[in-house]
Image (cartoon, rainbow, N blue to C red; front, side):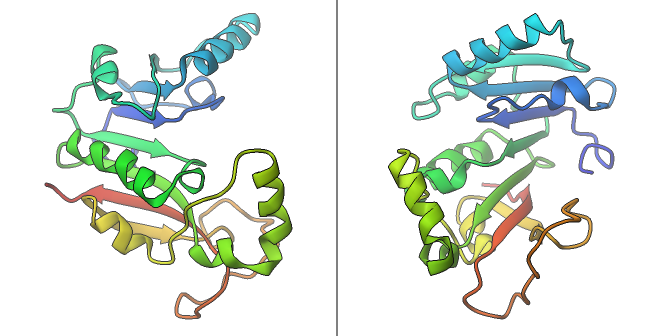
Length: 207
């Protein structure tokens, strides 16, 4: 785990949603977690957790923002220190964005990072967005108003263009990914065409 093996104590959940890791995980001493998302969503999450009398197990701060707009100043107002190494966690989001929006979201994270910062992010492959096997699922997303728009077959190259160097890349079902009951066989990387999901850890590569 990145936090266990490093001196990072500043963690930012981008599009945190209803994630409650701040309430259920053990955190290193001195850690501070920021949760960034839309104001209404964070307010509803706060209401539910208050009703449950839940208490965070780490210092937790909110940045209630519109992620479609400039939001890093709001994060700084919540106490974020860009001079400190950061772990950015962005999960379950990239496929809802266009390629330009995905790059536009992740590039500023690098601009706000100092050496020693890391990014955890997930992608789907472009092949998955073209696959006939996922057509029915994707059509239901379209009907729901939440289409999947972005996939990449080369996550290393995509992240390199916006300042991040991939250090670890896996697919669900590979050892150490905690997907023990994943029903699909992981295909060799050099085999072109299979639908894939990418689990990525990348290190800030500098400006």
